[in-house]
Image (cartoon, rainbow, N blue to C red; front, side, top):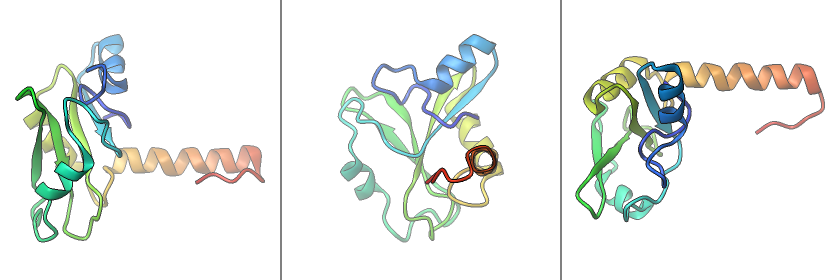
Length: 134
């Protein structure tokens, strides 16, 4: 699981794809922001994610103008205001990627990525004390 997109990327090959190919391991891309790819926009995603949906962590397919499925928009629960964007990285199906993310979610962002964010910020605070990290 990578904090970065897989095929849901302007070049069709994001960080998750790159790391998966280099390591020859399956990889799943988790994007916190939507890249505008193949006509996909935030407005389209918002229209397909009504506030009362996703009671069970539904995944809304992200289908571009070409008809290609680039990934899914996913909200773990109805309290999540912003979706995350799951896409295939390398050597894994979209269905398996979604299942893995469902198993790892307690909050908006899957727990492995959330913990990495927390720990990296703690490390930087210790190392650079007065540095403000968002």
